[in-house]
Length: 139
Image 1 (cartoon, rainbow, N blue to C red):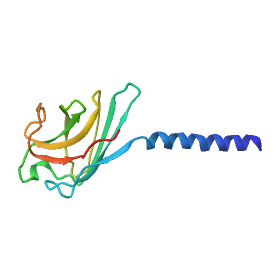
Image 2 (image 1 turned 90 degrees about the horizontal axis):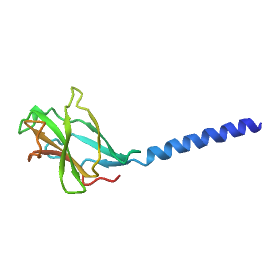
Image 3 (image 1 turned 90 degrees about the vertical axis):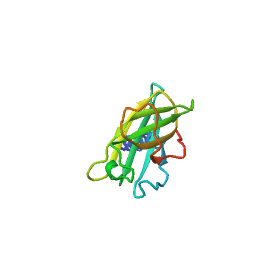
Image 4 (image 1 turned 30 degrees about the vertical axis):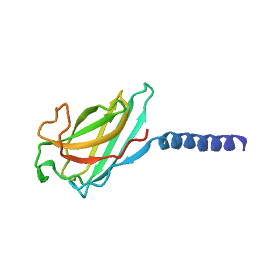
């Protein structure tokens, strides 16, 4: 009986630890967009063991970039850092089912994540066609 109780308590303790680690990552929703009104999504950011920031993005109903009123070639994910600079995190492509996932790691602390429509995905500075943006980022 003591072994069963120990195993049960160990199992409950393990589950609580797993949930506590998962709940540390805060969800930062994208604001509603006039460019892609059906798009909805969020960003999750957490610090890893090396003090880098793991950035995960999920978006549903993101229209194909070619179908925007100002047709472009690609979507680019940008990060505004705590040092007030913008970093190009990479390109995302909306698939046939309009769902997008994106994940990257940065040594800079993000304060805002935004997505622009661009002609060229390797730009150093964001253009003016902002498709989605967070209000801010909680880590």
